[in-house]
Length: 367
Image (cartoon, rainbow, N blue to C red; front, side):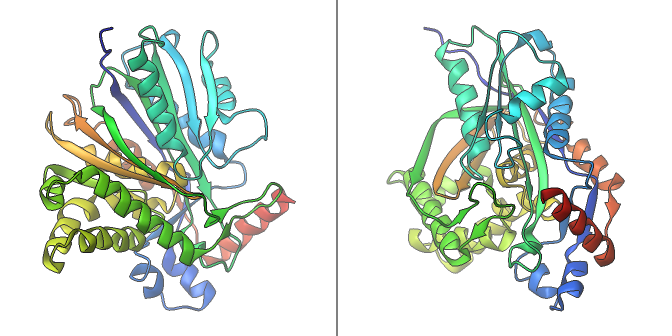
């Protein structure tokens, strides 16, 4: 069987219409703003007004991706949405998105759940579906979308955020998604949200340890006995799932330490290949399934054909995977960057007082 060329043909991103600088939250909570700005590496929190939800977020990202693709709706044979912001315990978020987009017909439609790892799984499944021949040359629409919200006063509150990334998986105009990947999983209750509860339960210390272990295991598997530093050097960017930027820094430094790199080498690779990819994440806050893919979309901008990006995905519970992407001819155009630029320019700014009112409306809606 001839392998069908498969990868990312189009990208769309969407951030919600409100944002609050973490300094406002620091003032509200009576803490030094450097605890959030430097201690966590956060800059802004993306927020959703009461009338705006996960369906709006995911659907608009999908519209933007479809608008840049040269196919038709009739050419879509799969829609898969990775999320942990489900709106129904039975009906998948993909059905809500398909309804918004008018996607009807011979289409495989489903939702993928594995905490923040769900978007990666949806993308992998779409690529494998096309590669298997089962797609009959149809394209897939993949969306990773989430709203991260914590109970007021929770330690995770300054990491809050929201965002959506959508891909059309077809011919790899923007990037080929490498067939080989490396995974690691262990059962753990580091982060979870029981049915009927509005906010997640988080064991922060355990979650950090799980995340760091997953990173070490996945990067070791990627190196496969080769010099790890040389393996890292071949990537133009190394992207991580970004719960908050300092967590990424800690994980990458442990990867380097285990590999036996000098402190100088670790910092060089981090500064050159990891940190730049998180620019948009600092402005979106944590967006769970979309978090890694916001970083990847940022890193793909302007790459020449053949340049590579590494992507480390993590989801609590826990599961992880590292995969690689190879830039295609349209990566250099980076037309998806305008999505982030426009959303950031247009979104309203929320101060501490408005944040309290917003959270009150969220609590009322949840009740």
